[in-house]
Image (cartoon, rainbow, N blue to C red; front, side):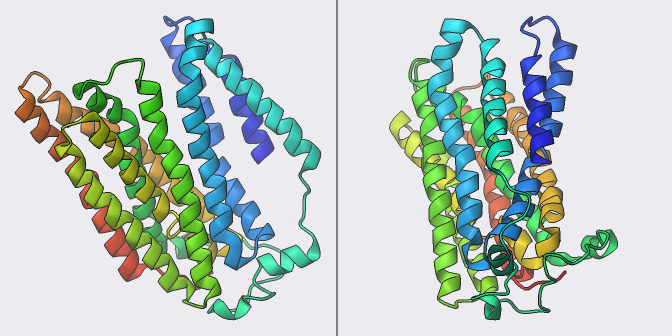
Length: 355
């Protein structure tokens, strides 16, 4: 699935029309890129659950996720210079070439099955199995049954995961889309925007790994999987909610960048809670559950920037006080969602194996 995904989105990026007037063709190609990339997270979750022991999965997922943030930071810093030299049409071609290069390495070094000892440890049969409540896991060679969709749709902890994924990406995508506008209002020039936009992603990459390391350390100290997931998730979203409420009050560019970095870092920290939980409640269905919850996250990526834009556009012609009030309203929505998501996961989430 990963190989197919990379072939599809790399090819679509390679044939992206450079003529700005071909809007329909550009939209179709980008839709194909999004569809192909949509299977990456579920596929990697399915791989991690077979390769990585339970008490190391938080670190594995966090490390994998941090690659996305560090890659985004690198893109923010380097692509403006590429665009100025080679034009905007060069970006999808460079991305496609990088993807094809990764695909060559993946095809060369990836193996179909983990070694027997690794597979046993990953399925909880070695070492930390006593920390996992519920029935023992099936062996890696067991025949997989059909996905129990009816049972999954009735699973309350799964819906807690869906809400948290929606919450994370709602806050993430509105910051991704609208932080440059806030920076502009505080006097940021176009030459500094690349560096300013890069910093929150660097912080996210670091904090993502911190959250994963902290979660695994708690599990190894026998804190309990359920309590660990809830504690990391609640702590990260609580900090993010507070930072989102503080962001509109920033009156200097330096303060806004600092609060934005704190917000994004707190969101990344929370991934050590909810993002790994798919593997806790359904190891053999981890990819399916990740696909469901990440689909909700993608919906948040469509809804959040649009809602925020409607709020901010309504005060675009007003004075500074009116714009400040609009920013407070725009940031209050993701802050409330972060609080709600943390509360729901703390009450209804679980680290027990349910499937």
